Length: 103
Image (cartoon, rainbow, N blue to C red; front, top):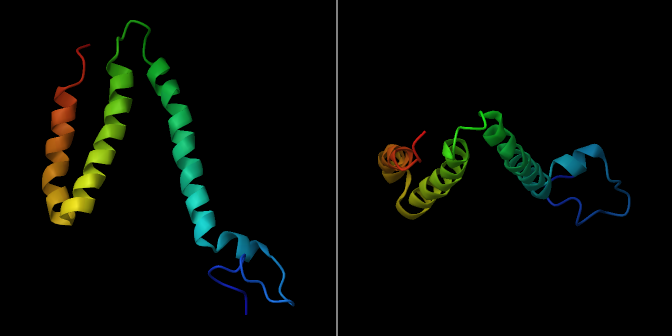
């Protein structure tokens, strides 16, 4: 039977580290999430520079306000629950969209 859970921390004398033990831990899932988030963060300036050079700050504003909206919506979900998040998410998104700089 292959080891599960925190197998990397508690290996028995006869067990070996396999590809299953490296990908079945909670730490590897968090590493994958952090890699995807860092890839998105590093790719975000590319999205801002993809707009024409006379576009102003609206392109980078979309990116910054997207991160701000994600944090605010997560905070509402964490503090008040899923029902409040469903109510506040559209309000937060529309409010932040209206705060974007003009074209």
